[in-house]
Image (cartoon, rainbow, N blue to C red):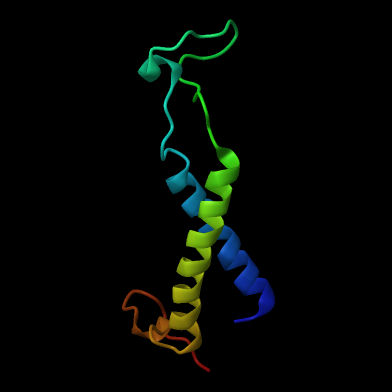
Length: 90
């Protein structure tokens, strides 16, 4: 796997994990029975803790990327074994 391919793969994994982590611990004004400031949506989170979620996303993404990289680098899953893809010649 080249460096550009690895960076693109990590970027995609990071965004997928981010959208999975974003709802964790989010409580809206409506759920917390808190007063809503004028101009804010009732569904806006009270404390989004976005920096913590970015850190968690980075750590989880590194673990997922390590698994994906090892599957590709050690050829544990080969593209030729997927039945609906065309056969690739080396």
